[in-house]
Amino acid sequence: MKLFRIVLVANLILVLFLYIFSKAYLLKNFVNTEIDNTHTTTNVVLNYIQWELSNLNAMNVDYARWDETYKYLEDRNNDYIKSNFDDTTSMVRARIDLGNFFQFGRPVRVS
Image (spheres, one colour):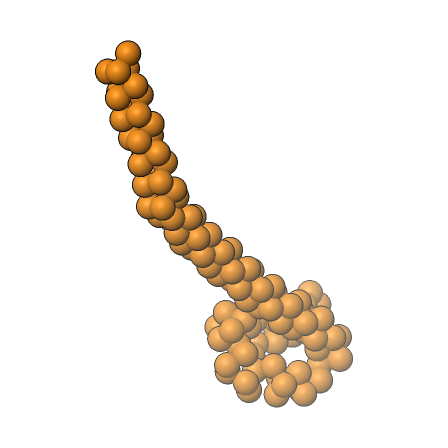
């Protein structure tokens, strides 16, 4: 019976030691790993959102140019050329290298 108590106390001490070790060391590392993973995932999501916003901005510039281009083909106002093609940085952002304007029944307009 005395041996049983010694083994029982030794097992309880071992279990208590393992509990304290796992709570102090393993759980802390697990939490740190989760925090790092959350930061990484958040950065990926933020980068994706930034990429989408950039694409939306480029698309908005593109659609605004389409509206102005349609108006230009109707009234042939040269202010359109000055406002849309003199600023090379906006053309680069919109990824436009060359613009050819065709309208059936009218002369070809190239900018």
